[in-house]
Image 1: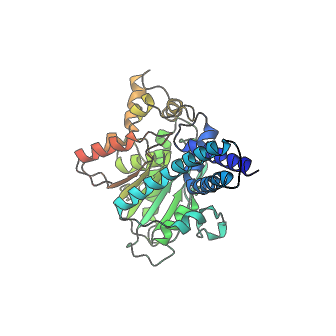
Image 2 (image 1 turned 45 degrees about the vertical axis):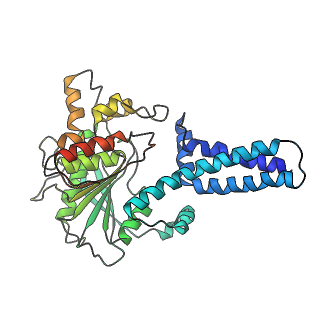
Image 3 (image 1 turned 90 degrees about the horizontal axis):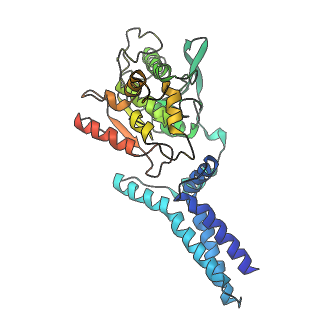
Length: 353
């Protein structure tokens, strides 16, 4: 019985852990691999239990060599399970950031009551559709001089919802920021102009209503994830560009923001079209073609759209400071995008990390 239990545990841990390092062959496997990476320390705990049980087999007189195979698989899964932790430790050390094991193991708590309160507001009505944002006031005394974060959700430009990661918003409010988690139009595609226009419209409205929300119109940052990060960069970098206008009147305000935070954004859409990530998970070229209205190699006009919609196109000496965060093993958006942006920002002496 001990041999069977140890073998089942070690094989299960190994089968789960292996997807941390192997590219996923399908979308549902990719979702599984993300969970395995997020909760890798739990896999490590199961691996340790399997190691202990495997060692106990010969001690208690278990025959055969099956326990050796169990031990090998358990050790392999333990080593793999430590890979995300070691990566994070290295980065945390470089950035002088402390980590909390308590918060890590408490991360499974999905108690909605722990999420900060918010109110919902309409910032525009476009083509008969209300565009809204959820407003989270800072939960501590605002020592950031009225700083605000505009959050833009991901979803391949055709899916997703505002407020999809409320715990992030809560964390930002706990650090003294006001948070505006916004809508933008997802359809009909191609929607590269309308989505960007809606982000800019939200910025204009928030600036206009800054007194109501007790924020400074000069201390607004954009924060996006994936497709939302692309829109955050594009809206920030192309502020006041007549080719990418907002979807509402400026009313004396400007579209400029103080800074941008990009989580795994595509930044050079032509390069991304020709160099997709894991196509077993997502058809990158098809997604980009839907967003921009066609194949960039079939017409010069469509190619120009790809260039216009690429944040790197708009990097100038007055581009706002930018923070890039990107997974080195990202299977949806290749991490080279971050490097492309960094090179262009370096050329223009723009502060970024």
